[in-house]
Length: 257
Image 1 (cartoon, rainbow, N blue to C red):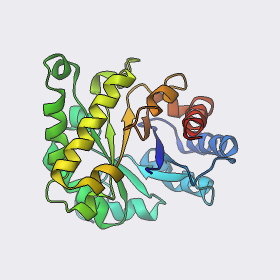
Image 2 (cartoon, helix red, strand yellow):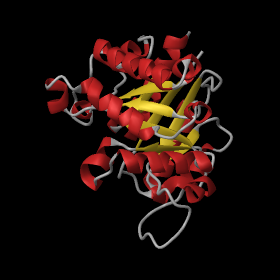
Image 3 (cartoon, rainbow, N blue to C red):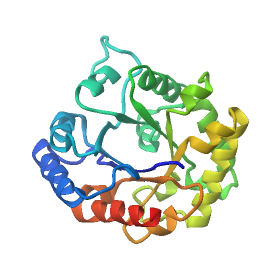
């Protein structure tokens, strides 16, 4: 049984003070959460990682980084290493988000390097894959997913693949208010799971968690979670408010009962 994972990607929002306020609010709202059934991950900006980690310490809520560099240290101005994330209280890290690809030129090779770096220092990578609108309209969704997944996992053994989370994020649904229908999400998730079977084995295909991201809200999370291959959500805008994110988590937990 795959454990549900709901992660909030705060992107470039929230000062340290605001991040503390938000995480304290979530701590209050989710204190009765059954953490044996669902993982909740907060991914604030780098500047607020330590403070958020301190707020949620011993609550069962995890903290994640939004990116990392693939080398442990060096003259790489502006970059953050996996070791630094770990020391700041992180257990997870988002890798290959479409915004990194779109605005910072990230490609599969860099995603692969970052994935390996995350694993090497004990972080759980949340690896993002997904197609743009023009690619979906051209019927290339599966081609893009195959390229992203195989590129990200290149050189990884099955034992490594078991340690990752994959986030299917159709780019056309991120921050647009558009959401893939449950049928579209399930179709993409099943394709990814079948691809993992081909690349590795049935154990990897069955155990790797695949979460959906793209305009996830309290009013669509339950229907998405009812799909057999959807194991959670990577939430953007709705993770920036206590009410909406806690409601998403609670509704996802309800589906599990």
